[in-house]
Length: 138
Image 1 (tube, one colour):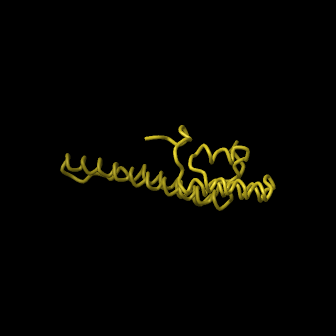
Image 2 (image 1 turned 30 degrees about the vertical axis):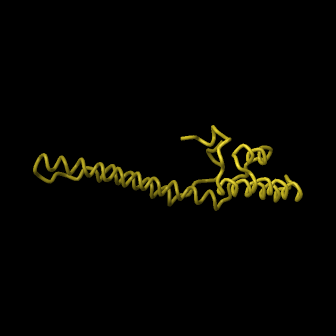
Image 3 (image 1 turned 90 degrees about the vertical axis):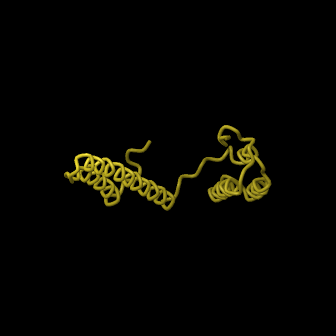
């Protein structure tokens, strides 16, 4: 399987064209492109077939900073991913606890409650106390 970042000669999809068009629109809004340059590059982006052709249209433009809404969506997606990891950990630890109970033929203390509780408390704390923008990032 090819990796697009390594092989720009691969054909592109509509989503990649849309991303390039969004970047061109942002550059127009910031005054980095004139209306004529934007129109010309947008036409070329719609006609581009490979990542190489598309990259040439945006190579001289900086990637815009994500908006607060985009950052919020990304943070929510990452937080929900962490809960999926928590659930996976809960399943694995509970399976170990259950297998141990079967081996001993008695119900023992449900030890996964401590690590799962601490992990869940951290995830809840992340949601309750928002991060300060700009601190700790380089």
